Image (cartoon, rainbow, N blue to C red; front, top):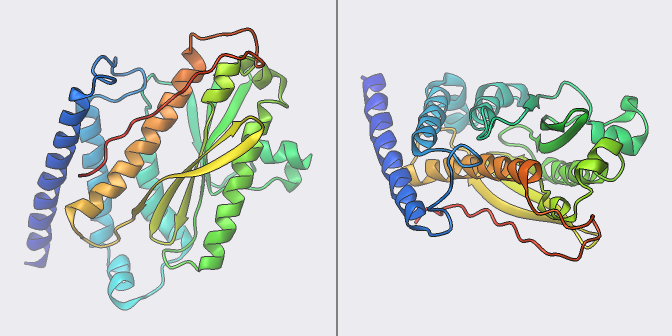
Length: 290
């Protein structure tokens, strides 16, 4: 009986969230800046967005049905970091970071090796820091850039752990930006000033049961690290609006990364060099839940 009730709740949630997504898509279609976007280059089609939303919901539903997470939410029984990554975070990130629009050459690494950007700063792979997750993009042969980092702990991780992860992500992001001035093949890619202005490195701080999405850019020699969006990670069945916040944050990450890669690869503005005085603003507009 309990299982059937959960299934009915899940169906109702799905319908509510699809309605929210449909309403947001209608707003995008009315936006003059996005009306002529060629889907597939860096923006997903409506069908693709709905398919990913469905898969995110299915992934969350598996978590909600798990006795482990029911015990965590109702009795406070701890969940270790490994379980949290494998059962909750990895499925969600893998859904939104696979098959990016435009099919750029990207791959994910889950805590298996040290950051190449960290290796360059420290001078040895032996001492390089390992992020819990990173996305690497190949911009051209031999020119690989770490564009997304993630750090996490347990769902009930301490404030101290969250702060350490926050600082670690800042360090990773800065190191990655610096590789574009240290590695010869990346220097060649970013020898055009507009491409340097486009470049953002994204990081995800899983602060307990909240996802925080940040971006770092280097402007006039200053590194700017800004919060883009944050959303709760629902470990139990909750309201459609709360679930939509997470879906929206995940889709924002996907679109921001895809757009950044596309602009770096295909930006037609050249200027003379990285010292060109021309300015170019790149804005990623994402719908907000009303």
